[in-house]
Image 1 (tube, rainbow, N blue to C red):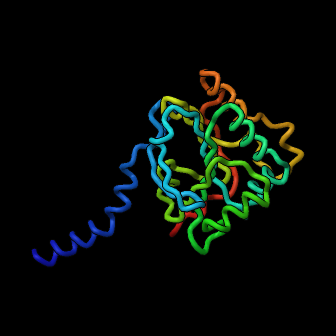
Image 2: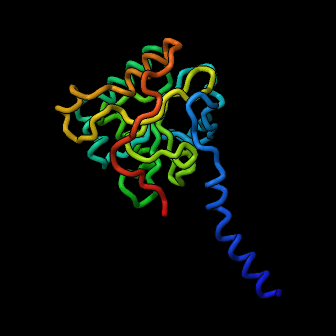
Image 3: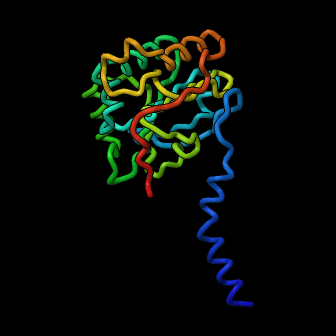
Length: 206
């Protein structure tokens, strides 16, 4: 009996992290966005709770991903970031790639990427453990989430409607993230609140 009990305890200790992750409430449109705390690329703490009262955009990114590359080579993501800032939104780029994986960045590398790409996020959050990414069930890079001033999640999904790495396809695509940002900023629901994200899988730690 004692042996069985020890085996049971060992099994539970091995599976508890997975059970805890499964027990997390999935992000839902209209519900409070999952709160998080983290550290940005300048070593400064950040929390979603501290941003209550502001429109917030979360962008999962990986500079080695060709889908992310399309958005930055075209200038489309930078334009979205600047337009968000112009209406008072806080744009947060999140890097959930684990050390040794494609797209991983420490603070200096993340800041250099921002400079080199002429990007304009308000903050870049480093998430090497994947804790924030798993909290939001972020699946791809890019993956966009938009949070209203009252803290509720209003959009989650792709940057646009065409899953392609070709810049020329962007003009033909439905601009899901842009239309959602415009609507939520005006106090309206996003026209397409949930869309299919496309891109590279987030390179979480194994």
